[in-house]
Length: 253
Ligand code: 13P
Image (cartoon, rainbow, N blue to C red):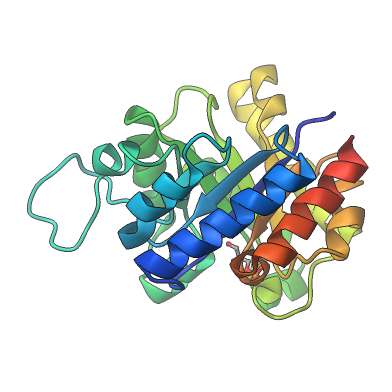
């Protein structure tokens, strides 16, 4: 099987108790389907990390957080440090467009988070993606490459990194980017990463995110540079999330 990574980003959905139930349902469906060779990661809200970790214990499904603050500890009210997250999670989503837009996170701040995550032993899932205006202007490739290179600017190597291309216009809209566009964008990003870190970066998983469902996942993972997906809405249903994992794994088998 070629390597496949499927990540669920639950965003600000579920409570600690409903998150436990959803995680257990996903665990049971994937166990039944026998898709444990695929790297599957669930990213619940931070407050549900403990209950989700408990439900997934021994399942082979990993846990990620949706955010961290790039400092070890201190007077940062409301924030979670990478070291705190690392006790319960292996991954962290960084640079999601919702955080860039709603919370004003700059490329520089995203770069600090990526470095802080790596130092703490958390694997960063670095998200990049252009708006519709940027796509129409014809500068999407340059824009996302710059986001990526800023995001990794404090790293010495690409070890542990995951890259996710999430065009803003495809997130939560029901309108996924085409496999062809996605392939081109992820090939561009992989090339930029290899230029920065050398050949070892060629094996960094490159994912697509934006209105992925159990149908469109097939044609996406058929593309050579699409190593999996970062799923929002469809990860909130155990049935649809498990179907995405199953359908993707069939193509990559
Ligand atoms: P949707 O799958 O709901 O479009 O969200 C994608 C996303 O933002 C994942 O991080």
